[in-house]
Length: 199
Image (cartoon, rainbow, N blue to C red; front, side, top):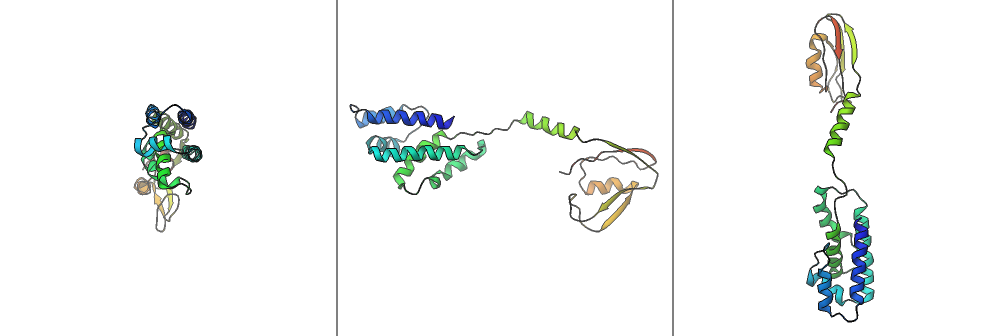
């Protein structure tokens, strides 16, 4: 979308530059009518109106190349400022500081976020993933070992020696290892315990 807009803007600038009857001042005024851009008159509009066709052809091509290169990546709203700050360093080294300023002035007005966060969809996906974890029902006798923890660095993030735990201590042990959800009975009978992925 932005590259198509840039192509139309540059074509308009081409037409204004080719007008044999317009003065430089009139061409500058025409450039200022481009609503999608906020061209600096001295830095950008005037040099574009006065430069040779060869110079403008090079700047025109680099402007499109730079915009396409930037917009092909994912851009969030929070990233726009840092991207704009890096633009001068992404212009080809063949251009001097004046030309770089012109290219950056045009491109910076055309960069837009192309990735947005859909909070509702994200939350729905999280809830669906949580519901997809099946519950497991097991039976245990009073005093039976129900949890065996390997206290070492691993998926659980625990450290230390290997340890076994009776049912009465399982709850606090699991809490220490950041188990997301668990219910362990301290007595006999059926126990419903649910383990989700660690955060």
